[in-house]
Image (cartoon, rainbow over all chains, first blue to last red; front, side, top):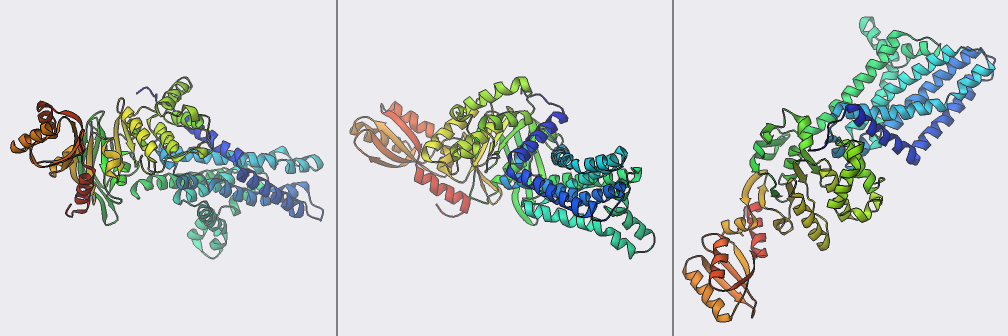
Length: 250
Length: 309
């Protein structure tokens, strides 16, 4: 056999390129990005800027608040197709018989959607840039906010990927991802009716409440970074297990 | 070279494959024959590493694939019943992607893609978008991706299904060409489709192996009939068959036509080779000998349904 065994990195890069090409050459990727950019801009204009006078730092914090919601939706929409579409088109065996392990396939799929989401976030930069030019905010505040958005986006992509790895239908994958995300978003409400350590634990698991607010205000906390990275890792592991699990199903 | 030992697969409480023990030699073309739901695809998916067996072992070149699944992927090329193709890619772009996905570097990709394009007779369509290809050419691209990394074993699930007669002939030729460099295992529920392509058939029913052998072996094993085409005078033909029948090799002879003579015979005992030798020794020109199609169909029905032929 003359085929050599290459590094996992080159295989992952190959799949990421292919996936990014898919986003770039199909209308659905552009529609998702354009629609969410429009929504994001409208929210920025209507709520972050608002009609009453505000400090520019508050405007920026509100901008990050609304953009975080859009980022989650973009993450779920970009990731819903990752595995479900392969399964639906019957192309999963092509990837499953490559030299990449299931874990490496999951990483490749994750990185492709996360890269697309990062591109989307680049297109939102004009809004904080306007605040930066016309107001008084620090670059650090903008940096912290975007780091938070990237981390939150990573979680939503990993949740969407998990949903996608379970089913053949992209719509069903989106619904699964959305339900999981909503549950994690609403945990802060649950924590209010649960006392003691369990309440604290549930509050800690809430996706947005405690962990994203520091980023909104321009602060990067280690605990929030660790939380988001851990949650991303957790759902990527579940995705890998779901892919491995197909070996036990018809 | 490839060996399964008591391979078993359960889906819940339903047993899809039961105690399947087979051996396949290097460069052999073996056909998995069975009705829909007989367990062919489940077996092929287990061999391809896409499905975990409930119990049993699969060995390739003496190595247990469960112990080294990564190495296993290098040894296997798999074409599922529905070819795993990206419709938006060109044939060349897709084979390039598949080659890189199987570990070829920049220097080797072009060479290998050219080789596979030629092997699968895809040269004319190499710049065509896959979505625009006919079913037959999609199957060829599917085979191309299965052999692109030069695997030891190529597994083809129903590669002939849905093809028109011309495409079937071309596909048979392509599969026979694979034999030079690969061991080939293919499945079908249609005996005439693969009988002429394979060196050996494995007949599976209800997840169990019910018979193994060549098309002729299967027919003989069941006292099958053969269609023989011979040339010679009518008297010589009649005399030759009378002698062979008296010798105990045949117990039924029906001669039709007026030169060349089309005869349907039934081998009572012995091998088809003995019949061909006897015919030649009798001075007849042996033009063709093959299992009678109707006989094979009834045999297949008997094997797979357990009923009378």
